[in-house]
Image (cartoon, rainbow, N blue to C red; front, side):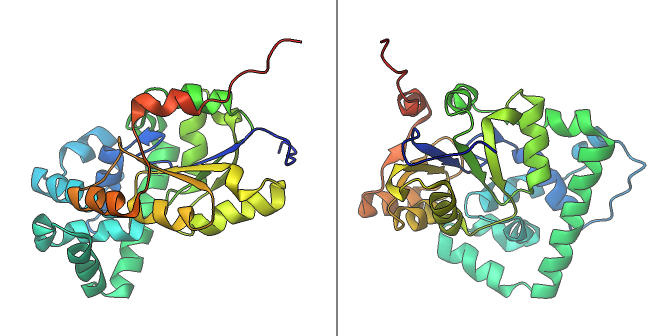
Amino acid sequence: MTAHTAADPSVLALDFDGVICDALEECALVSWLGMHPHDTSVPGPDQLAAVPEEFVARFRRVRDYSRLLDHFAVAHLPQASTIVSQADFDRLFASLDPTAVRTFTQAATAARDHFRTEEADFWLELHTIYPGMDALLRRFNGSAVVVTAKDADSVRAILARHGLGHTVAEVFGETGAKAEAVQDVSARWGVPVERITFIDDNLTNAVRVAATGARSRWAQWGYQTPEHRAEAERLALTPLHLDEVAALVPAAPAAA
């Protein structure tokens, strides 16, 4: 890993799904297989086509309120289609048996591992990079980290597919502890936390990281809700639109 000092350019800490990468279909597919038998003799495209439309619709709603793979289990509840607030979502998630949630997460992870290793082309094609994010990562080359609920191996494989593997110094995978990850980077890299810019499409994560003193921005191109937008305005949390990403790229040094 590249050595860092306090004199280095600002550090970028990014969520993955919903910020760098759009992977809604992949997440819906592995979530479906988290509760249903996965016949590995059936090719991935056929598996995806077999996911019921009503489940995908519920998953889209659930995705807006989720921070972890565990949370996707809520999409299997018929009541998920009626969620209109974070409180609604939290109540439904709390109603799930913890053992069932662990079983779901293990099965969804196993399905993801299968597609990633045995049907790599299909799996990788389910992930696209949001416009402008590739250029942002290249300009922050070596001064960027990913902090995500997705597993680190998947993140690395997707970045490599898009020629971005070298741009990210570290991946904090399968974590919801994003504020702690930002503080860890600050301490180990010797970079004041105020010089770390954090971007996440989940409002809860953005608020928690803002409390560390980092420059936390709430991405508007991922997953959010009207409720979250109203709450962000109340908290004076700065939103970030996709067409503003270029402004985060540090200016090149002036010629001598």
